[in-house]
Amino acid sequence: MTKAVSPRPFTLTAAIDYANADPHVGHAYEKILADVIARFQRLCGRDVFFVTGVDQHGQKVEQAAKRLGMDVRSFVDHIAIRFRTLWETLGITYDCWATTTHSLHQQVVCKVLRQLFSAGDLYKSTYRGFYSIRQEHFLTDKDRDETGEFGPEWGEVIFLEEGNWYFRLNKYLPWLSEFMATHSEFVTPAFRRTEIAHAIQHWRQDLCISRPRSRLSWGIALPFDPEFVTYVWFDALINYLSFTGYLSEDPKEEEEFQQRWPALHILGKDIMIPAHAVYWPIMVHAMGFPDQQIPQLLVHGWWNSGGAKVSKSTGNTIDPSALVSRYGAAALRYYLMRDIATGRDAAFSEERLILLHNTELANGLGNLLNRTLSMVNLYLGGSLHPVVPSHVSNTLREENRRSASEYLLRMQSFQIDRAITAIMDIVSRSNAFIEACSPWALHRNQKQKTRLVEVLTTLHESSRLSASLLAPILPRESAVMLKQLGIEAVSFSHPDPTLRTSLEVRPPEPVFPKLP
Ligand code: MSP
Image (cartoon, rainbow, N blue to C red; front, top):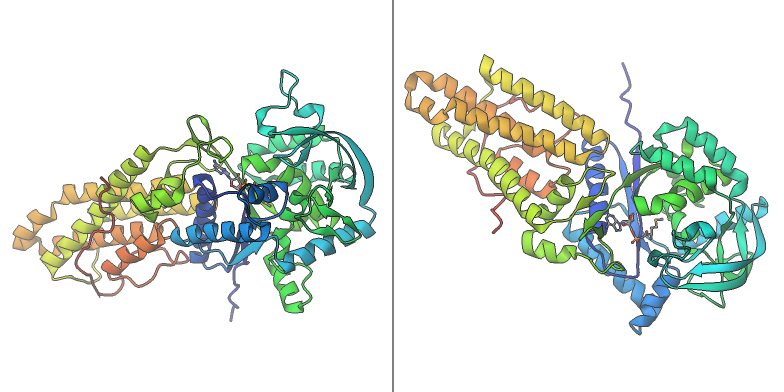
């Protein structure tokens, strides 16, 4: 007897958002993208562990609290609630909420710091030069623009002379170059590899991993020098380990960690270099992780508005909660997955959100479902039984099967927009099939009864397939559609929609009411 092999667990993380402001559509996009991937993997039978949360330390957060006259603790708690409430409204199914002020995380950061300190990878030195408060970053001449100035992206820039702790990043650059050259799977999309290779080639500095407590107290104290707190990025990146069981004292959790790791990290292009593609793999390597345990990156592009990245500092922030109140969570999830190619930028447009919802969901899929269910109810009393399909139906089924395979390939490679196109191909083809077969005419002719049953069964299969494939993207609506179709559950381990047992459908109820 062969033993069933269960698929490897799938761990994914979405970047932890700064707790210095309310969420905007850029944040929402990333979490929906991660949620769609997580849901897809679950439907494929994998045990998924999805981590996201908020990045609560650092000067930016401390200053934002001060501006509002709040103590930092209450401020970060308040922002965390804003994010969590939005994720609930949007149906984001994370398994673990990572907050960097959590004691578990603080312990792991201290363990990592002690380990690197004992290995001789940390040293103290004095820095004299410019510093960006907004980016919490020590600047070099490389950061100046063509006019020789530090551009507006750096915010307020001050001159500093201060002692700090450094991580020997330079020592590990040759390893990172070699790793990059031999592990093409490290970053998706592949076009980002050149950019990373270029950054590594020109990298010169070690990483400053501390800030003096006299200047910033809102952070994790260095365990071997409490006059300093940990640099916010060094602290934040470690969340990926803290919340997956790394260095846990509980042997069960440590074993779980071995199963769960490496993770897939989902992040935007603005935080790829240097944080995720230079600092992070080197940190993990220096901690002793073998190459096969170095995590992978899925780097997405930006939602822009008025030609610039949607962000609070640019002043063009777009509030996802307001969009949900106006159009519903489904319309927003669909739009944010449908109108951007993973890895590229897109221009946010409310008109496109309405248009895509109305044309593809309300008119396309909604009509297919409505017509199929109405006709099965009206002509067949709501009952369907397995039938032998005709040549014409077989052509449609064959084409739909090809679209379903295309969908699976696209979803596996995180190209959600292309996967949606494959669903919409099934929808348009099936709507055209209705027109071509005119079931209403078949119904009028007694001799065509067998053909009518066969056409409606084929349409039921098409509707079921479209609704099932939509499950990771619009889980609630997919479940409602499948219920109307008389189907209990979806599984992508067996995506064949062929009707194998008799079933009863329900009367149609609109799932995608048109947006005004
Ligand atoms: N706190 C850091 C991440 C630490 S991860 C260890 C951070 N936070 S952020 O709030 O500024 O951004 C969080 C995520 O949202 C990032 O992946 C970022 O790229 C993404 N986005 C922020 N604005 C965006 C758009 N306008 N469009 C798409 N995503 C963008 O960076």
